[in-house]
Image (cartoon, rainbow, N blue to C red):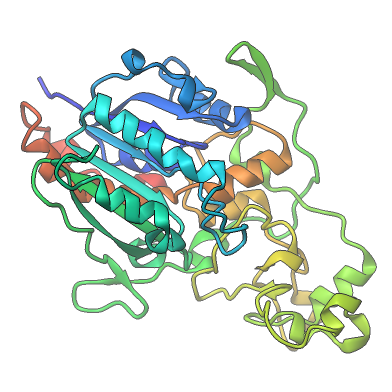
Amino acid sequence: MVQPITMIDLFAGCGGMTAGFQAAQGYKPVMAVEWERSAAATYAANFGESHTHWGDIAEIPDHHIPEADLIIGGPPCQGFSNLGTRDVNDPRNKLWKQYIRFVRHARPKVFVIENVDRFLKSSEFALLLQETDAGGLLEGYELSYGLLLAADYGVPQRRKRAIVIGSRIGKIELPEHTHALDGGTDLRPWRTVRDAISDLPRFPGTTELPPVSSEFFGEAVPGPFKALDLHLGRQPTQLSLQRYDHVPPGGGRFNVPYDLLPPCWRNKKTGTTDVMGRMRWDQPSLTIRTEFFKPEKGQYLHPQWDEHDPGNRVNRPITHWEAARLQTFSDGFVWCGSKIEIARQIGNAVPPVLANAIAEHLKPYLLQTVPAQRTASQADASADTLF
């Protein structure tokens, strides 16, 4: 009988990492922990409520932590982010210590930490490295770490993430690239915005989620919503539409005529080059953040723009469905929460296809210590199941 690789997902969010690992087949989640209610509900709606813990990770007692072959997760990273305060005393950045507590009690063969790129230069990461020394809390684990560009692993997005792999079954390096800008002998070309969203309707039919709710953890939560439910438009002002119309693919606020600019942009001649930006069809998107529905926050305008035919332009920000596609969530994934909560879940998630590349890379090492062999059908599974 095939024995699954058991795993715990900490700070699980909506379940992007779990989605990628489950698509690799052979992995079984035995516990997931998430603080934010709607994100925990989304996770539970997709992977089951019985092993999902909604609440403060610090309140889970040691004796409730199960043994597992693998721990995955990304402690909240706002304090390390360029968009945050970068305060090393931010209590959110102390949650990595809870991650270590789980490693100590679950004794996984391997653990994976995902975070923003600045994490690798933080004092918290330096302390994490120290804990692998003799007498440290992570003694016996060897660490590999670095920055992974999501586009290099099949995600249609230029998203850089810090990845740390800790192993007590021999050092495990980070996975090799599977994709490159122009492909190559052994690499596939980057996936593009066109690959991800060109088949979706250009003009959303609604601005609101359906009036649907369900119960998770004993409380009512909006949803679950299907992919099509997330194809949500907005109601921009006429001034906003005029601004959008001047921005070509790859352009941004500097393409907007001076008389249409708000005072804050008129007085700021440099920086923030991607705001009011328009995506390019045949390139990956820039990083999808939590407020992708606001063009003033980044390069989030729909890529369709015809220089010679103003009638062949799509002057709107991307929808939640399009953002989820760019994050490589499958259309079969369902979502819970308000529009803003779901947007936050999408932007904060680990792209499932990136997680899948890590999962496939780890399998041979973990299977060396897991009894029995996997079936041929499992071995043939690939990240294609995510699309």
